[in-house]
Length: 126
Image (tube, rainbow, N blue to C red; front, side):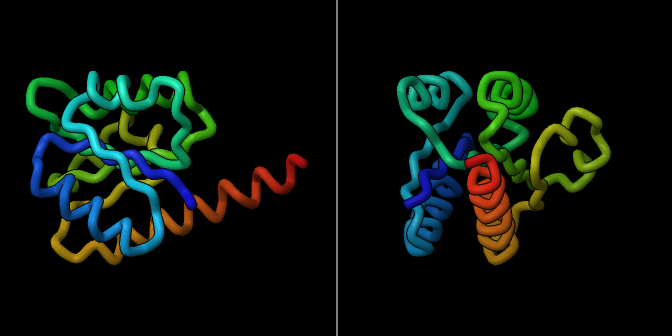
């Protein structure tokens, strides 16, 4: 079972993502801030992270940069209500970018695609 970290400052979004992704067979851990995400990542491995860009008083882009540096093998999907971040060079560090929607089909497909890609890469390295 793949473990997914969801970081979003909106409780309703965290709940929605957690429920929907659990239904897809993922183990889901949620965090409301970068600090909470860092705490939950201590001593734990995640297969993928879904990050909101606009967190209350912080930037998901900053967390993305930290994750790329420290956990370069973990795919990260940015999930934002704002599509214009796709043009921000900092966002290009992410493995995927999804515009938030009540329909999570695109997010689920992107998660499945990135986890399959990660599994193929791991298999090729063995």
